[in-house]
Length: 219
Image (cartoon, rainbow, N blue to C red; front, top):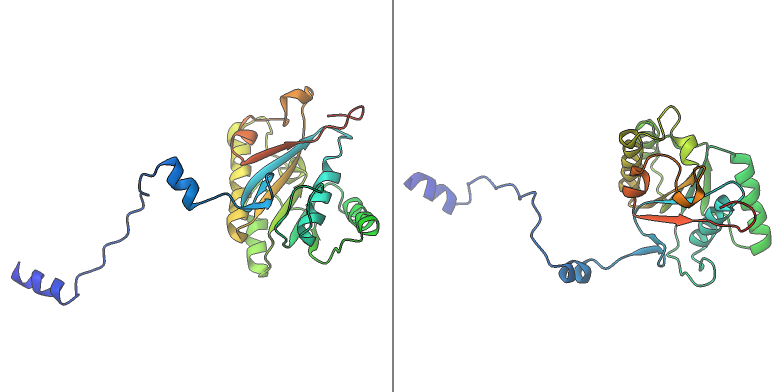
């Protein structure tokens, strides 16, 4: 015991690992210490995963592009939602050429720059291969838009809570890689009022859900 005390006094004792359990806190303490940070004020957090959902013809891809252009330029979205500017990666698996054309058309109409937006062939959320590749590129983005969720999950059962929860978990891994927000573009089901098509775990496991409605053209 005397030898042990002597070793401790001399600083030879091994360092004890920090506990992995966080302290108990009140809601007010948490809110004060960690106020919300927004990529798009009041709509998209700075980090995490969300879904923008709409039926055919609802304009969900148009809205996603409008968000991308606002973030890429640090300008307000829809006039009254300030953004924190940053780089945007648009993963367009469904129609890369069409999305590129729409972004160029937006640029010509709005005169906003496209220099902070990159298009890619499509990020798969079936496994981690694409995310591991993106990690190796040395690139970094602040907002990632995956259009569409259906195209990003080929072979997965969209009605399976476990399989879709896994896909969302991989989206969160992408969010953690770049400390960014990942926005998934998704379709509504046959009953549009019920929201995202497929497993209930989709909306249960994300930070925010936006719904696009265009009267007379789908919802």
